[in-house]
Length: 105
Image (cartoon, rainbow, N blue to C red):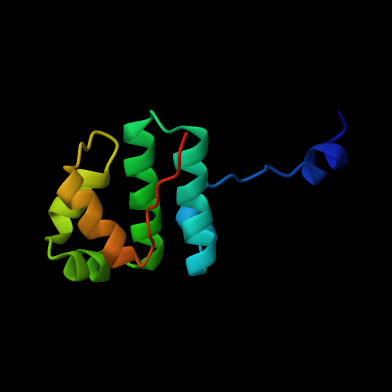
């Protein structure tokens, strides 16, 4: 490789992907959660993370306040190792402004 070719090489800079930055509307947030519920209904940790992604997109502090939880406990419940109670899930879902629904399997 010549010196001029070496100077022209640029390094590609990568940044971690954060789905929360892509969730801009309530419809996008609901579709994202629905995709998890439909495509991976047995992945409880994944669904909790999806709720966490949506909460981060809306603003974790506001979601925690609306759900009646501390910000720290919300991060813990919806984090990678979180295991939120069903009561917490319902509080968060309400605070996020999305609805869960059931249909016959």
